[in-house]
View 1 (cartoon, rainbow over the protein chains, first blue to last red):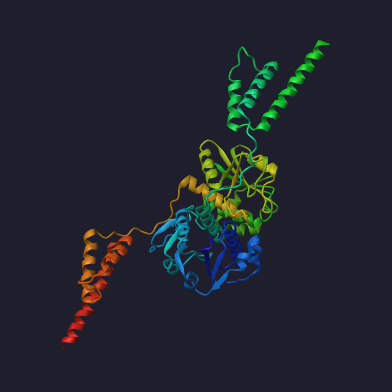
View 2 (cartoon, rainbow over the protein chains, first blue to last red):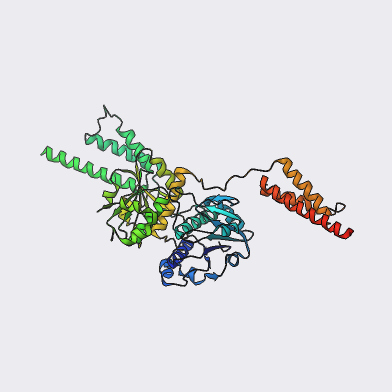
Amino acid sequence: MRHVRVVLVRTSHPGNIGAAARAMWTMGLTRLTLVAPKMFPHEEATAMAAGATRILATAQCVASLDDALTGAALTIGWSARPREFAGRVLAARAAAQEAVAQTVNGEVALVFGTEMSGLTNDELARCALAGAIPANPEYASLNLAAAVQVVAYEMWIAARGEAVWTSPRFERATHDEIEGLHEHARATLTAMAFLNPAMPKRLMPRLRRLFGRAGLEHEEVNILRGILARVDELLRERRRAAGK
Amino acid sequence: MRHVRVVLVRTSHPGNIGAAARAMWTMGLTRLTLVAPKMFPHEEATAMAAGATRILATAQCVASLDDALTGAALTIGWSARPREFAGRVLAARAAAQEAVAQTVNGEVALVFGTEMSGLTNDELARCALAGAIPANPEYASLNLAAAVQVVAYEMWIAARGEAVWTSPRFERATHDEIEGLHEHARATLTAMAFLNPAMPKRLMPRLRRLFGRAGLEHEEVNILRGILARVDELLRERRRAAGK
């Protein structure tokens, strides 16, 4: 990701620069180049960057797109609308894969135009590839920082895969614990007169299916057996009361 | 997509509601439910919605998360941070695929928490699935509307695929046109004394490789042969001038 620069061309609203910086850093991108921004630095940029102000602090400001692209071996210009003379056009996912593959050999630049009209035809023509985010053809106008977010997200996945946080692994119940639970349930449900052993219908298979799908944990078997044991106790108390 | 609702819970900044609406509509999502928003309607929401104000106009405001989720057959709560008691956790792409598959049978709700801390543990526990956007573990805090954008983007792709705009198809050059070009180039480059037929080195194979990679169009062959013809003319003029 150190070989990737995000280039924002003639951005009008400083808040969008900040929001783009935040989008970049959430996806591990750190190098931001600004081509002739209307206002920068600016307090709105800082506010919208939230925890990514370091991206703004190290951002480079240059006067022209060519200055921003110097040294880049792969340049991808992003456009929401068709252009007559575009060369190869790739969807975001494929473009990100190509970009990440290219970082092994050289610098990659991801280039975004203005809020109102994107890159000019001339600017897009200076890029080796056109990138496009699949979107609603009735309204394909993503906010600038939102477009940076989607592209950065695809870059992250192309580079690092789709790992996300997971819930902690609790100890799984063993086969014999699970069979013990079903046996206990069958006995208690019979004692409760909810299950009639002479006409069991499909109750036990349905319960097996439910708990099978969930994948029971050791602790959960203990909780469920605790509930059953409490019902057993209530049934005994009732018998004692009835016996009085 | 008509069966998908986006639910924003206790959103603080109305601008984020508008930006989320814009993100939704760029990806074909239209149904927005707001649970106890701090300020709505609000001019900042309208401004940030840009061309998606219709999403705001039809948004529903409700008092509780349960009200927002009534009737939903699949509820996905989004979280950037690990939760101890989460059940299944899916990355955005897999979650979107499951959500789109579910829309055949029922309603789907995509649930997003507050800007500051996301969904509470209790709110997330009320959702059937936890969704997570793969992101930089050092700073996984996407802006609310940016998170909606990424999730909506994955929903669009899961439902509609990755088709994007393409550059217009121009007429491809035929085999014989391309061979005619190479023959012409060989002759002219020889006449220019740039190519030495006795020691051709690798010039012609390199040119073949370049134009082969590009995939020549009919019109491009005409342009290149026009340039060669102009060089031929200059060579003839020079010969005439030298003959005087």
